[in-house]
Image (cartoon, rainbow, N blue to C red):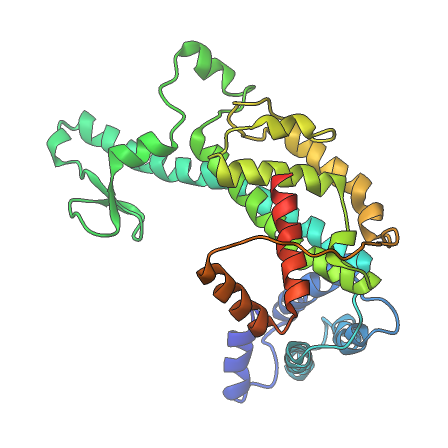
Length: 347
């Protein structure tokens, strides 16, 4: 992709070859490095359609001759890659494995965590740049000229007040750890800052990841193993569920449910929930321990059906029936899923 436009321009202009070997070497490295690098860490399983689609591209990349100045060998590889991309966009019929689902799940978790952890740093760097400008204005004696609003779309200070602005002082107070004394300043290199905004960032990955578990990974694992969703269990995800509930329903303040955690014993009741470096280290190590158990077929799941009686508002009944009909599931199945979700979010 880095050379797609320039190579296209050369092709459309009737250029037949590169001007010198260095240009070929640079282009070859730019094309082969990401493709072969990813192949080394994520090589598709033998016999799969995915491997059949990608292998010709990989073989063509490996066959590029950096001493050959002709443009054809490069355009041939780019055309093959485009064809493979279109083929993959149509989808392949390889049945996914539980190990693949679990690997995707853990990789998604790591991406969510790093995004949440760097989110506060990114905001602080943005505010730091703005604050430096204000300090410069103060030194120049132009305090009154400092814009008081910050535009969250343009990411810069402004004198205008609009739907996309917030007072800079409010934004600073919302995300900044606060004024540091000498002791706090010296400790900042050893002690992590803890702010309500950082807790909110953590809450977003916890809530999102647990929702993905319930609506995506767990369902796919159940389908692979041919069992009900509820049969796929994880003590680790159960404890993340307790955190999810406190972030979603208790504004990120730990409830007594955190006492039930045996593997992620991070928070005490009434404590603001902000995972720290040691917590994340433990989280990833626990998921590596859990990888095999998550992929394994669950124990046989047996349950007896029983009638559940109760009165609910008619509008809820109508909404339930409408959603169940749209999903194409029977009332018994839909009600069982709803009750299971309610139990797991409140147990």
